[in-house]
Every structure is written in C-alpha cells, then in structure tokens.
Image 1 (cartoon, rainbow, N blue to C red):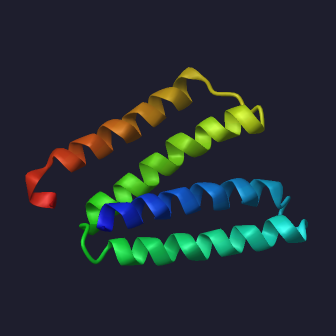
Image 2: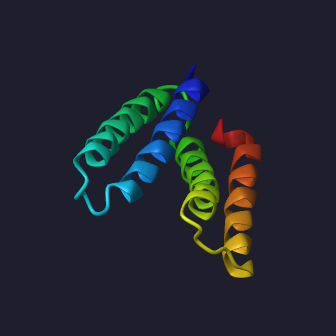
Length: 107
C-alpha cells in the first residue's frame, strides 16, 4: 500500500506543479486553488507512504519521477527546450534512484 500512496503523491505533485505554471504566479484563481489542493493531497499521500516505505527510497523516487515527468510535460505543453545537459541531468537522477532502490539495506 505504501508504494500505491507514493504513486499517488507523485501524481498529485506532477498535477500541482503543472497547475502552478498555469496559475501565472498565483494570479489565476482557479489554477491557484488547484495548485494548493493538489500539493496538500501530495503531502498527505507522501506522509502516509512514509509509514511503510523508507524515507530515502520514497523521497528519491518522488523527486526523480517528478523531475522526469514534469520535464516532459514542460517540453510538450509549454514548449520549453531540452538540451543535452538537461537530458544528462535527468538520466543521472534516474540512475541514482535505481541504484538507491537496488540497495537492500534501504528496504
């Protein structure tokens, strides 16, 4: 159940961050409200996930998946440019999370 809640936290964080971009610095009320609600849901799910998932694994996974998916969304929805350096950085995040999850003492 912990990993299901972690997935929920990741999904809510990605939605919240996307809404944050649409909120235009919290000047758009609807998007601003959605941002706050999804961030609250994100942290509720993450806090519950931490009851059964190690903090190091949960936080690293949450961050890395959020970075990768948010970067893809920013390129697709907002036409933000990716370059070799940003792609390398994302790849390093993914490698780090995989290595952390392979560590048997972290579970």
